[in-house]
Amino acid sequence: MAASPLDSIMAQVKQLSASEQLQLVKRVTDLLAQHEQPENSSGLIYGKYKDAPGPMSTEEGFRLTEWHPTEKDLNGP
Image (tube, rainbow, N blue to C red; front, side):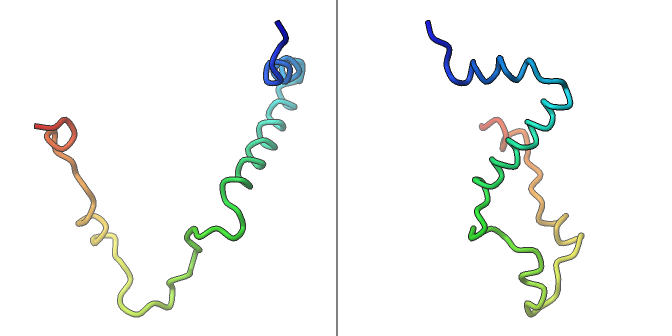
């Protein structure tokens, strides 16, 4: 039975030093991050709403609106 491309790559990775394996992980992670967040994505942009009218949210406001589930919320009736 022929090995899959992934099995072949894994065999090669096992021959690398720990330092080289970490470099490989970083490069693959960077590659995946490029696919995850394209430059023209509609994600949040830091500082985009800094000039919005009205007061900024406070730490107390976040605490008041934070969800604190009960056992019923988590496990049902």
